[in-house]
Image (cartoon, rainbow, N blue to C red):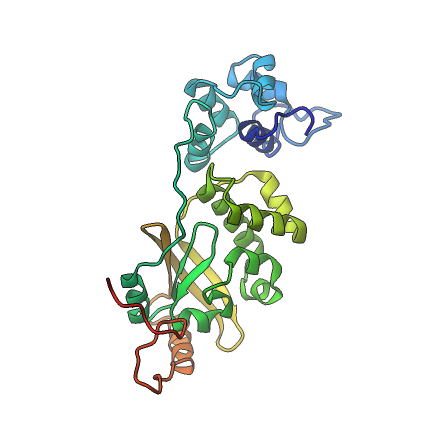
Length: 291
């Protein structure tokens, strides 16, 4: 936008969030002839106890160092939760970006071994949802969980993945919000830039969600998926950070209908032993030796 400085992440976030708060939510009368969705700039300033001119400077990127007290007031007015409030505080120039040494995301050998021993769908993903390793049951659950796939790209662009998720709208919103959170201020990472650029061109859904500036933590949850062979499965999801990567596991309630279906899927997808007797990794290649 013309009225914002280039790279104005704080201002872009403030603008996106105020557009999502209705006057009624802020305790204001709706009024007539509102030209913008959500709250006006002067309304945010009034409710936060700061001058309209100062808020305008913040949103336009002409003041990037507001006090923690000002940010806390804005977080209250914009109805931010704990994750969103932390994200807002991190956008302030008062917290300078630390130098970062980029290194390729690496799956430790012991995690490959762990995947091979788990009897539930499990895989390892990077910060931008690249699948780095997976066990056979994860691939049986969804072929898009093979190493080399990107979960967000599949979710937004692959019709089979859209059909796989019972609540695709929620899944896409969650994925995009987590991506913005995990990438943080490392927005010049080439892989991230390429992924966002590709999805922005190819997916209207991504463009709409990215413009909201939602952020979300790496929490677990429960989801329902529709497998083409065994049908609907209700699965819990947990995520565990291991060094620079995330271990993701899916599991049903014990002795539930989904548990029975998952056991059937495991029986149908049991991998055959290698002809030469060499142990195989979940992706079908020899397992790496532990250092």
